[in-house]
Length: 150
Image (cartoon, rainbow, N blue to C red; front, top):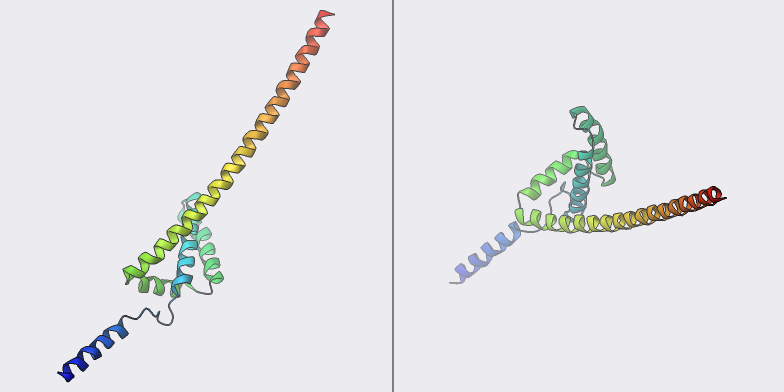
């Protein structure tokens, strides 16, 4: 019986060792990968505003991606290996994309607040200009009417 207990715990130890959450060497750590993927998706979105000609996308896109990889001290090969590693474990990928979604939502909300403030300021300034123009036109019309009466 003692042998079976030892084998059971030895097997349990082996399974626990195999399923460790440690990231292998050469793979981007999860936090850094989450930030990197967030930036990659922002770049992807910004490329939709560029002309869709293949050469143009390559010219504008590659420069942005290379700059991003440089900022994160990585390269495209390490990024591809990391993506393969994380896509092999859907739970890790789901956790990362949950964080990415939260970050993107927060950025979108802050941009919408800024846009709302800018739009309100533009509307206020346009209304002020229109009131000034209307007042000036009214004054001009009153002056013309007085001159006509004289």
